[in-house]
Length: 233
Image (tube, rainbow, N blue to C red):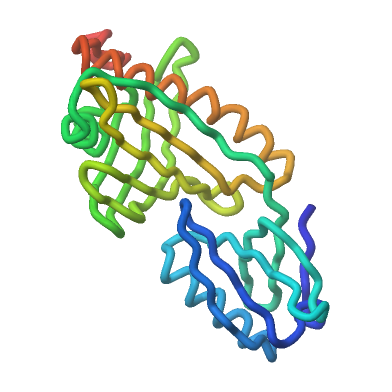
């Protein structure tokens, strides 16, 4: 459900805006007085997080409407409130390699092109490009490019990036933890809107990230390459 607000009468003064990113929470006390002020606040949050922020508006002394897991996006004249799906993609795998090895492979475009993509572009530093691309990939031979931006990069423990466009922009958090003489990789993705496109996308990506982590494991442990362009050459 998407609701367009032409004013902020529903979002009264003395409101706290909480922005959630990964497992970290930042609380900003803000008094929202005008629509222009609200749009300015959202613009600041966009610049801070380099992606449409997830916002929770909480009731204070029963003076505001409670809405949860929202993404705010703006146009010159309106503020749009998009209800988000209350679920998260989560995929995990264990790889016989050090966290440094796994992290370096995961953040290297050339390695991605050997086991999962064709034309990946990746600058593994905050604000850097993280663009996934496939050409004639897999049994369905599909071609696709998805833009993205690196949000956090803490070698060898954490890599966070956004990807997608418009309402389908989501956040992927990948953690690398030493375990049993190897590394456990945990990937989560959230930020899908509760729309028909959002529901279809989360189903597709839930399986896609599982495939990616499996191919990453086989590539690091056994050197198995899964790239349609290389296989045809």
